[in-house]
Length: 301
Image 1 (cartoon, rainbow, N blue to C red):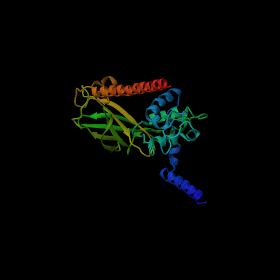
Image 2: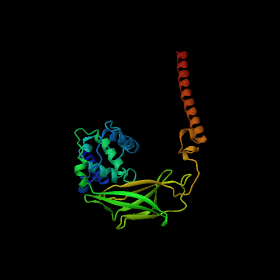
Image 3: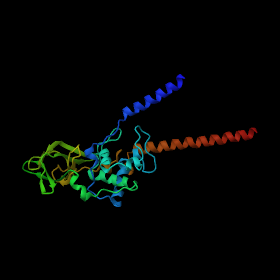
Image 4: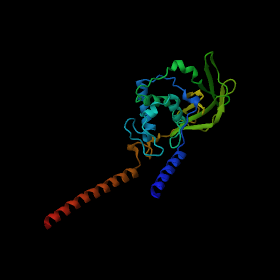
């Protein structure tokens, strides 16, 4: 009689432990009503598929195929009703903030890219009707528009934030701006985030020794940092000739681990070729050995 009791106790303990390690992922009420200001279209869904396959497929698998990764907690198939029954704001919040083992994508994908992924997912949810972006735009939070210039006198990157309101555009005071410069392997943050002044400006000092391309051009991007999601994300990108002219070959022009197949390091090519030869040698050796054994058996018979 004791054995069933212990088995039941073990099951309850395992369930409680799993629940403790994976508490409910609660979306704040003020985030559930967030909507996309972009209309979901078939073309948008196709763009979302590309982003999804690059960033999400390794864990969630291909929707409807149920080939998601076997990890705890389970990422699940995103075509299932448990996902389809969620509001757009709930999906957006979960993609934005993440929850271990899922990473947060607020600094990986732009707001428009996150909505594009949701557009792709919605194509698998039968009966889904997108809320009208025009009717609900007023309740979607602060809308910020950014612009960027280089102040040669101050040697600063000046980012201007304008808030779009019903009464018209006005300087966006108190918006936290983050500046990035494009490097080989992604965007590198420049200095600490700055808060816009009453006039809507945030200034970033520019390092005079930062290398650019042959003409000294660098690609900059500035975005509004808003972890709470209370305002619409704003991003501005621009190419400015403010870097040190640098004549260096592109990474894909040299033999390196991160380059293209044709530019792979010689030792990698040789190692791979040798490994293939060794594997096939043993396969052929095993096949021939099996054939020899069969011949010996036939002779003995």
